[in-house]
Length: 121
Image (cartoon, rainbow, N blue to C red; front, side):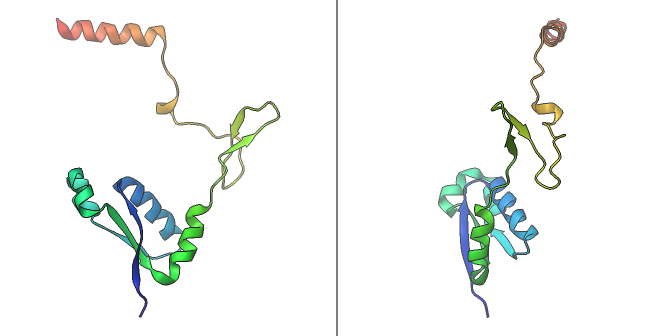
């Protein structure tokens, strides 16, 4: 019977779930403990020792190598400014989603102030 070990400890349940999903996608069976308790009350993080990622001892070396891999997200062009490239297909038509783009303008500021003034009345 294979031994189950604590492979890694996280203080953020979201980060723990991202790593868990990456390992499951690679075919490594794993699970988290203390995740729900820390999600409900983050002050218990220190008392419980964080969210623990468990897996079989035989998969520990492979999991470590998978987590060390980095996916190149930016390909350097000749001018020195980066261009985003899809790691799966190599497409150069990749960009940030709408919410992360800078959308500040004078019109946005004016409309925001207008709504604030009408709300105060």
